[in-house]
Every structure is written in structure tokens, then in C-alpha cells.
Length: 179
Image (cartoon, rainbow, N blue to C red; front, side, top):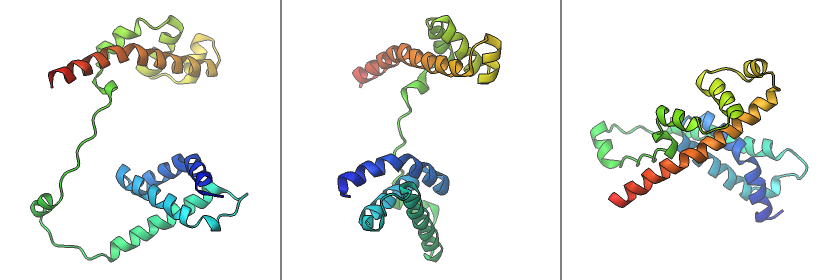
């Protein structure tokens, strides 16, 4: 086992670690820090890992222990009596993350582009996303398999993403030229 092996091993379990960390921490920044610390501690203690055992469980154990240690250390830290005004001066507010491109698409634009999607895919998309029907309801109503509903929904979303990427990218290009 070497660092390249560990890198592949870490990537394999990163999603589970991040999901658990997010659930424990309650915010993305602390979750990322916790996952990073977990992977670092795992690498430092790689000789303790026994090949053939559950690597995910090993990493999750490290993550849980780190989280508990952080909680304990926070309760022991003395709290400073700092006013919110003073705190605002000392700590710069983090920059907000840019909204994803799809967030700027209106329902009107979506409906307009939806007309360009072939009927079987459009019908499934409308029933699921716009009417809120379940896969089972759609399958029963259209007389198709539940798996087919899922496949058509994925394909409809892919088509919509491609069709909507043009207007969104065009708007982004206009914004860049005006700056």
C-alpha cells in the first residue's frame, strides 16, 4: 500500500465520507474540513489498516472520532465576550458562491424548450417534474415499465440541459462582454 493506492481508496469512499460529514456538521464548509482531516489521518495511519477489511467503515470510524473530538474541544474552549459589531470587523464575510447557470432559467423558458423534446421523453418529464407523479403512476398510466420511466426521464433531462445550455451560455457571454 502506497500513497497512490490510498488516493484511489480515498476517492472510492469520498462520497460516503462527505455525506456523513455533512449530516454531522450541518454545513458544507465544516463537512469538507472534516473529510479532509479524516483522509489526512487515514493516510498517516495507513499501516494500521488491514487489507481485506471494510475500508469504508475504517474511514467512517476515523471521521466519527474526529467529529466527537471537535465537539469536545469546542465545549472546553473559553468563549470570548465579543459583540457582533466587533466580530463583523474582525472576520471578513465569505464571498457567496455564484448561482448555477440553470438557476437563471425561467419556467417560461423551460416550457418553451420542452416543446423541442420528443414526445415520449417530454410526456414522462412533464408528468414527473411538473405534475409531481411517481414513477409507478407514470408507468401505469403510459403502460410502460418503471425502469423505462427512469430512463426516459434521464434522457429528457439531458436533452433539456443541452437545449437550455445555448441560451444560458449566450447570456453569460453577453455579461462578460459588458464587464
